[in-house]
Amino acid sequence: MSNTRPVSTPAQARLCRCGAVVLEGLAEGVPVRADAAALNADGELDALAAGRRSYVLNRRELVLRDTTRLNLPGPVVADHRCGQPVPAAHRAPPAPSATTRRPRPLDPPY
Image (cartoon, rainbow, N blue to C red; front, side, top):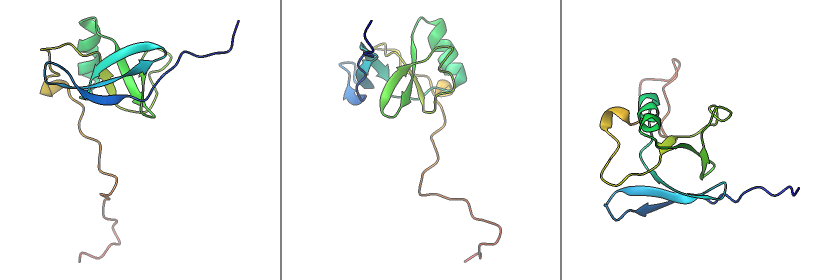
């Protein structure tokens, strides 16, 4: 038995023939085309119920989500299906900007 792991590649943003932005790459040796829109918990549940796989974008690679990988950091996305965009109610809120910080109580108001 060899110690080789299936190949994963960094996800690349591409334009699908339907006009949607998708993320393409190999996830543990399997070609993946996922919607670029990050999902909230309801969106992931809806995608799974529709028979779509979900992935987490971890260190630029798509990682298949399963019961052992629920706590991996990163946005959750699902397999792309042309003509079925992610509804606004199922999109995750945007991540806070790294350059924006909250004022501390001792910061002067000017």
